[in-house]
Image (cartoon, rainbow, N blue to C red; front, side, top):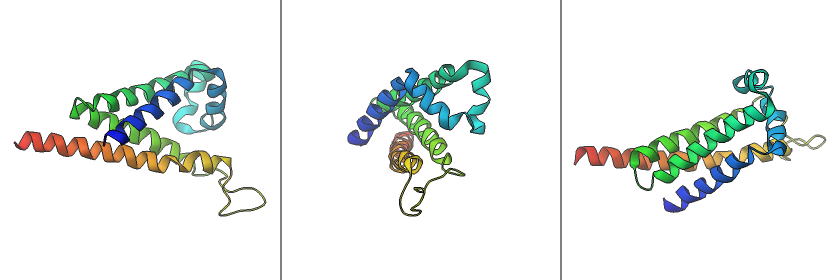
Length: 142
């Protein structure tokens, strides 16, 4: 559990911080600007503002996962937050061009390579959330 926790904290910390950089904000906008969940934010707060919001959410998820080492409630919340972020990024694959042009399945294009790794990260967050939930239930029953 500790290995899952701290590897996820590492991922959320570095990916979250990166969202505050212009290069990452532009990269995120390339995908997220046309996605209904985020499209409304771009006219309101712009490319960098939207990326900052996403980065803040990622940093909060990582912080809650880290606090899960001390508090099962925080761990449960962090695991659920992480699951939400990875479910959202995996949902980008619907309607996206996933296979390498000219080759087709199973030759993944850059979008598929970017998204498919999030399936294992989703499973890791689920594992942490379940562990925290079971621990909370055991403590309540004791």
